[in-house]
Length: 70
Picture 1 (cartoon, rainbow, N blue to C red):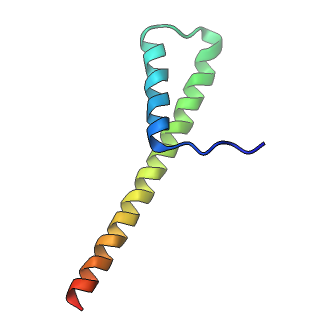
Picture 2: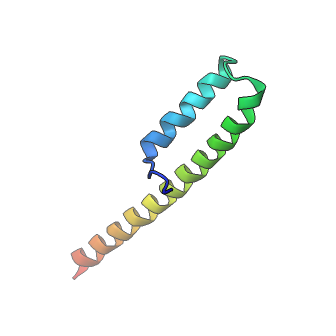
């Protein structure tokens, strides 16, 4: 089964939901490990997305500078 692609915004919202559950002590011990692992996956995804976006923006900016000099 193919996983649904998640957006950066959806990942952040899910992380916030997990943090809220933890802060309000709404997670039982059995779910805590699962939620912490999921949060770690989401954080990794967000970091990678930010890195990719930064690289794309840098490339666009460099291309624009080249066009202005030409």
